[in-house]
Length: 91
Image (tube, rainbow, N blue to C red; front, side, top):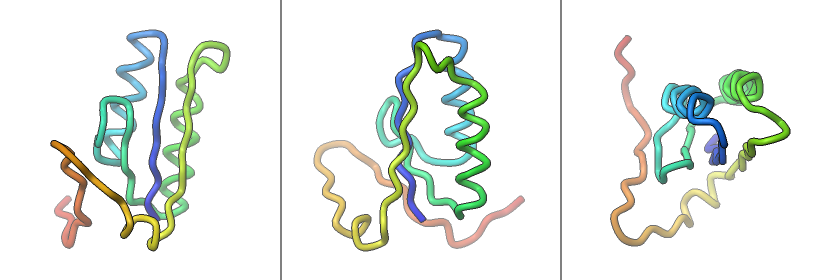
């Protein structure tokens, strides 16, 4: 399942932490927007981790779940490099 995660973080230290977590789980498609191809279990783990890092009074965090049909209809213009699904993971 594709999840689109976006954030607006006011504190630079928290911003770096949030970005690092998002980079662990997904691919940056814009400065504060990540596309994450995750199972529901992995998405929930990421979401829980992100929520421990934000300040609810100052920061914004939002995630959209996109169905396969919606992902196929994604339009891209300019210099956007959309991630492709990995066929093989090497650990």
